[in-house]
Image (cartoon, rainbow, N blue to C red; front, side, top):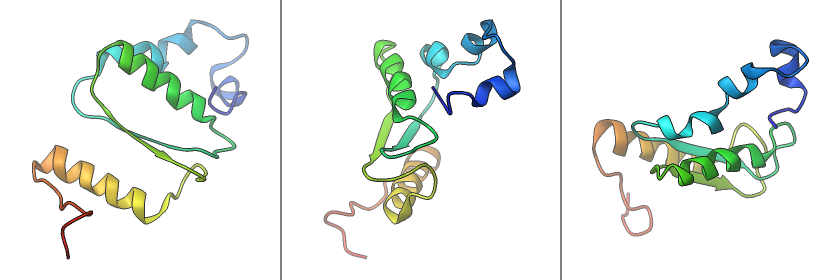
Length: 107
């Protein structure tokens, strides 16, 4: 579903087994480690349903992951809220430090 005709430019037509072989949906059960998925609700070039198909496959595979849905956002620069949540994810998951509780902690 990503950009609908984009893949054909690189993978050729007609659609072959390469599509399935390169699908995140097909490989979701292989997830090891941590994953943060983010999706803009209003992305015109990448249908948010593509991300939700991966989410569904991860849930069916009983995988743990984080999902950030950005209402009213396009595909790309998502602003300070996304930047903070992404940084918090990396600090927590890669460095092993709990980031501040932004709801209660003061700077």
